[in-house]
Every structure is written in C-alpha cells, then in structure tokens.
Length: 152
Image (tube, rainbow, N blue to C red; front, side):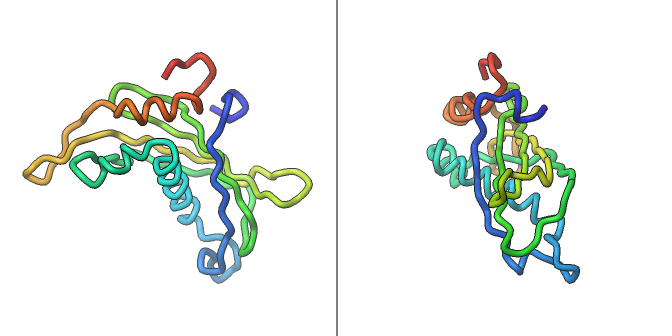
C-alpha cells in the first residue's frame, strides 16, 4: 500500500554519513533497514513512551519480517526523510510501510520503499516468548497513520 492512501505519515529525517556508504560511495543497503528501526524507535519515544518503558521489562517487539526495494542511490550528506505509515494490524502484530525520500531539492524524490511486521510478545522466565495483544497505547498511537477508515 502506498502512502498516498494514508491520512498521515510519521516523518523521520536523516543525514547520510560517510560511515553509511561503501567503497563505491553509495549508501550500503543494510542501512536502509537500520533507518526503519531508528524511525520506529523515535515514533515510540514520541508517541508511545509507555511502550518504550515496557520494553525494559518483559514486553518484546519482535521483528517478524522486513524488506526494502531500492529505486535510486543515496550518497554521503544526502538528506533522506522516511515516511512511516501503518499498513496492517491484527490482535498481535502491526505492519508498517516506509517510503524513503531524498529531500533538499525542488521536489522530494522517492528513492526506496520498505516495510516491516512487528509481533508483540512477553518474555518468559525460561528465555522464550509468547504472543500478547498489541498494547493499547501503541494501537492508539498508530491509528492516525493507518488507512482512512481502518479503525485500527
């Protein structure tokens, strides 16, 4: 699902560093996935701080899947904005989409598109985890970023 069908997206801006590039000079592909994590963590800090605190206890947000498709290269000192949206949710999981835009020019340029699904779980005393419903604070924080009429 593209962000054009969403009422809002959560934006995270990042300045590409030389450290994030490879010998060829473009951004190494795994950094795009790291940026998804940075965006998600900033979202939690700003919109669902109780969930962030619960992660220090027995709550776990387990990344069940992630992906990224690349359309154009990024280089050191490019500014990129990730626009995160809620693409799906059920009782135990949420899926988020990420559109990556190079910014600073006349028009933002879509350079990549990705996504991830996160499952909610509780850690058990034996080192395992078991599924738990998405915390209400997280569900409420993500709701405005979902498709119109989704009622997440």
